[in-house]
Structure formats: structure tokens, C-alpha cells
Length: 181
Image (cartoon, rainbow, N blue to C red; front, side, top):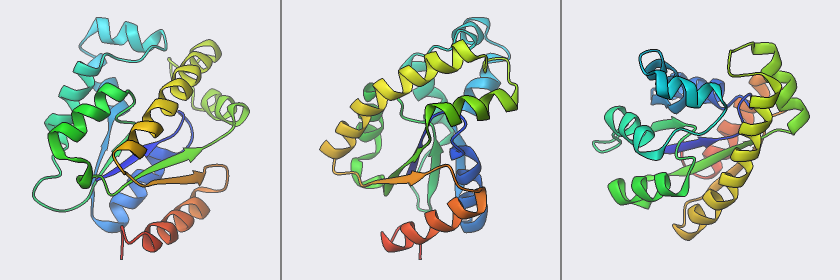
């Protein structure tokens, strides 16, 4: 299992899909699952439109229904777990040894805001972006501490170069770490 982290707009979804396609792995995006569910759930849509994080129980249910690494093969999970409770639930369910690596895509706040304004989604107004960034940074500090506690390796990736350059750098690092061959 490979966990992908990074602020919205950092390219983690793009890189996750590239890795999945290139290596034949399953790709699961927490954000995509949530946006799909929000189409039929007004309360969830409101939470997301206001730029708030969705309660862990809802996210866990969505992820666990589609992301089962048991049975072999890599699975890439984008944007989950975001809260310590979710990470503890994931570790309890599958064990920390099932997590090969957590990849953290790093991008400046200015670049994040600029990228998100360009994509034009309804939840990407500047106030919502800043609120989500603040939440992301608060949660990531605790997540990184907990990943360390569970002895999960963390790979930090500069998300500012081109898509191709990031993909090449990521593959090289994952090969060094023997996550891919």
C-alpha cells in the first residue's frame, strides 16, 4: 500500500494515476470518492463546499469499501488517511507493515493557491483553499508523527517541477526504497 499526501493541487492524484497505470496497480482517490458521494448527500456537499474535512467515519467507510490490499498487489491511496483517527483505523485493519511508503508531495502555499484557482472547481475559492491548507498542515504534522511511530517510511517529493520530472524522480526513489523494481 502506498499512501499519497500533499495539499490540493500538489499533483498527488496525477502522480498516483501515472504510477497505477505504469505499474498496473489499483488507484483510489479519497477526494474523488467524496465528490461522487456528495452528489447525492447534501450534508456532505455542504461540509466540502465550506472547505471542512469530512468526518472520519464517512471517509473510512468509502475507502474500506474499495481499497482492500489483502490478496497481493499494490494499491495507491490518494489523500487518505488525513486524520490520526483514520490512520489508526487503517493500521488496526491492515497492520502498519502493509504500508510500503507514504509519499508527501510538497508545494508552497502561493503555488498551491495559484494552481487551484486555475482548475476552477466550486470548492476552490481562495477562502476555502486557505482553510483547507491550514487544516492540511495541522493534520499532517500529527500524521507524520504517527507514521513515524508505526515505522512507516516517508518519502518527501518536491511537487513544483513538471509532471514528467516528478514521475521520473518518484520512480527512482521508489526503486531505491525497493517499493518498485
